[in-house]
Length: 268
Image (tube, rainbow, N blue to C red; front, side, top):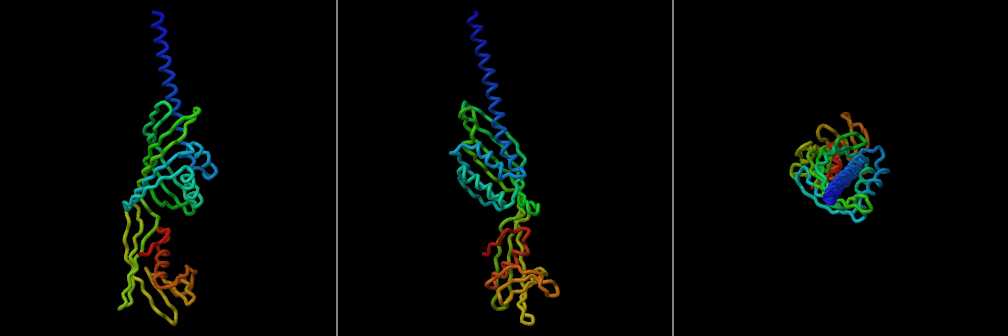
């Protein structure tokens, strides 16, 4: 009987030790995930980024599938170094991501764990405080433990964009050689959709000056190939850019008019 009691006690103790170890592992993994998110809210995230990357295995792989608002899908596989560079570049460009983290599940099997969590994010331009885009990252993370330390071995991320306010726009410039009329078709992000607008570009020669007007805003293209923004009395306000030809002038004008929505304008 004593032998049976000893076996039962051993089994019970093993069960409690295993449960305690499992609970401790879950806490450690939760902290790794939370620290990574909190770093991105840091006042100086570049300094703290290395601490976050120390939680990754040297051979870690990051698989990212991005689905943009226009339903285009992009896939990439990144190393630990490339993933770190991605965030370094984002911080250098003064872009901030605000997150709401939700951890759904953590399963531990011996020295391997799988964590499932989501990050609802808002991408913010720190220079002006404007929201650039919003979305959700659905993440499955595989971790391994060596020398009692958990390391991220793999991240599988599906990034689904739900709103977009700033991004790359497209512009198609159409000219009628017979009438001289020019039309610019612009596609730009507008929250939960992309908006298409058509703008008439009016061009006139007044007292030797080559003038353009779009949406009531006036511009001048000089002999020096400089494009200036003008006030309503045709006085120069400031130099916008330079342009080699008529199409480039329209591109620069559209980029100026859509500066709050577009990081750049791709001419089709």
